[in-house]
Amino acid sequence: MLSEPRSGRMAAWGNALLAGLVSPDDAVHAIVGDDAVHRVDGLPGESAPVGWTLALGRLRALGVTGLRVALPAPGHPLGLSGPPAFNERALEAGEAVVATGAPYGLVPEVSEAGPQDAVDAADVHVEVVWHCLPVREAPPADVPSLGEAERELADALREATEVLARLDVAASGPVAEAAIDAYRARAERGREALAPGYPPRAVRVLELAQRVGLLISVAYENGHGGAVSASQMGARAEALRPVERVARRAQVAAYNAYVEERERGGGR
Image (tube, rainbow, N blue to C red):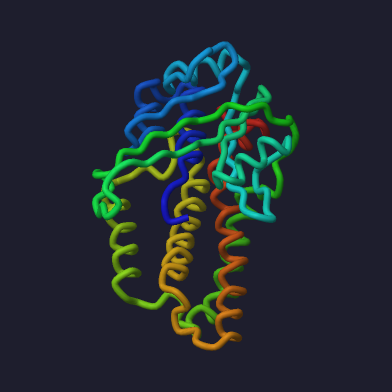
């Protein structure tokens, strides 16, 4: 959760394009980000993989009116609605985009090439193939409203803070400091948390969820922190697990806020 999910960028900027709030070039540039190339495979009416400019136009022509995010994990099909074949592929990738208005979903498959010991991300060549697959038109699993997500995140943080501090889970050190510095650098560059058209509350919830995700990532990367006994390790895992789940739910709620608002009649 330390990095922004590709499905989040795709849904946010795809929604902005579908709403006429950004140009195709701006949407595609934001979706691809630092990756080398993206292709969309399996689109109805297309016999070969295509780029995002054509893919987004095709999705609109197929009746797609909005895009939602799914961030599933084992035992938690967050944002998915089936069928099993799509859910399995999304679970393997850890993310997916599910369309509204037409029964299609997209799952990214990421390929990386470059030096194994590459320190600079610019040295890694990343290609992404998005597989377009049929989905079931049904409510997505376990997605909260923005208000629910914000309250859950605050409650989970309060409950976990004491345990995490006692076990030194987010201990300071080179790994933690580097991760926090990287997060601050991205924020200082003025990175847009969401695309135009999203409510301010969605931006606030997403930024908080991403900060929580940063702390969870640092905690896991730092091994067992100050937890040295089996019982402490178990307590550490128990403290992290619900916070991680709540943070993922909050991310999905933020990315899906544009579609949710429009369906309630509050969108453009």
